[in-house]
Image 1 (cartoon, rainbow over the protein chains, first blue to last red):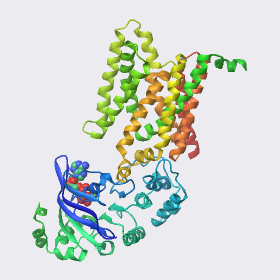
Image 2 (tube, chains in turn yellow, purple):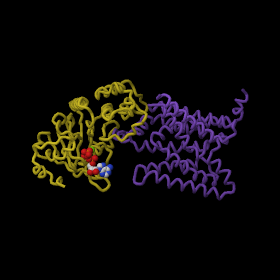
Image 3 (cartoon, helix red, strand yellow):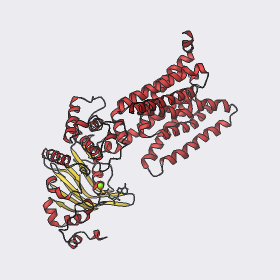
Image 4 (tube, rainbow over the protein chains, first blue to last red):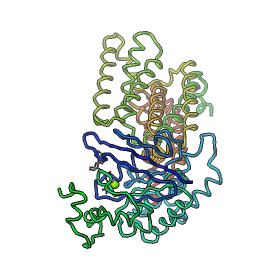
Length: 262
Length: 271
Ligand SMILES: Nc1ncnc2c1ncn2[C@@H]1O[C@H](COP(=O)(O)OP(=O)(O)OP(=O)(O)O)[C@@H](O)[C@H]1O
Ligand SMILES: [Mg+2]
């Protein structure tokens, strides 16, 4: 399927008295993985939350699969937040959490059936958590918690997948497994949006990159974005994440985005 | 043997046992959500606020349940609204509003002559005074809340655990929160007659908290909580007949005992 899965036109998103996103205009196609990069506080999470319908834009237009996010049928969007603010002492096993991914798809009169169980099993396998299915969530490591939440999103079988830094804190093997499943879903036509700070592997993950710093600074294939120079401006800010590269001209970066100087 | 069955000979005792069973099951089922969503202060607040409604209904000669019910539901929805807005601290709002409402109830009550006696029964409940029509209302409301919990079960579970991601997936977390608060309000109104305002919060929290000690998944916790709740209300009522003590206080003491037994059992399983 070709066409545009997400269309944002002149989108502003405000918190109380702070505008976190200004005039964002972009489109995401079906069957593409879009990477969202930018320094801390640049509005990556804000953008994902807005697309998920958790925040309302203060102005501009946003259409997700042809509709405003809150009008979509239950189960359409799966979202993996950057920080899971849940009560970890909740009485639930890994299986229980991943099974919740199915809930939006089931009407109350429908049973949680064997096909649902198969999907949950498969999702657990993808994040390599099959053997931990019965473990209580309070007894997971940080990376295992993150993997359980990614599995829950996969179990939902969504039409749009939103991932907010899902690889933070997970081991290399899981990261690679996650990349493979994302590429597989994208190949099946699913649109995927993912915020990341890992700039070294953007070529392997994404079809296109959106460079964000309250405004959209650049949008294009990773190669185009690198050539535009906006990318190096972002790289300059990512050294706290261990991806420091001294292979760019700082002044060239400032020419791209003067506000960053402050 | 006849001595042991003696309480069941009286019609008012039979009604009390049926009412106690319904209240025990209802409170502890809702209590599972109260404990996991940390709503115990809200439950306490709704119960206290309802007092104003009870007194007004009493003074106007209206039904106890109608007065308490209206105030409880309005308060619950109000709390949900304040909670959603998130501008003022929820604790503060509840603290201010409910002590005020409770004082209003006491104020109106104290202008009446028979003040002391009636206040006592509102505060501590009198399950032995349950009338046939009260019983039907209790059973009816129990069925309504029970069916609603069953129908909304998955949505309530998901929004209790992770309201943000549930909402992103298209499950309307605020609607579930309001539904839960309204059910909580109705449950409290039903429980008021049985255990009274002062002890209703205990019945909402203690059985579920005891079940939480012994279970690691949601459904078993809810079932065990219901068992503890029913055991406390039935057992408490039965014991209160022999020890000639307040039924409400005996029920809560028994629930508290079960809670400490559960903690002890959890500790024993660890070592
Ligand atoms: N709930 C909130 N209330 C007020 N301001 C907020 C809120 N959440 C975020 N902000 C502000 O909005 C801006 C964008 O935040 P956002 O979380 O979208 O950044 P981000 O790009 O995801 O950053 P990071 O790389 O640290 O995850 C920040 O300046 C932040 O301070
Ligand atoms: Mg973020």
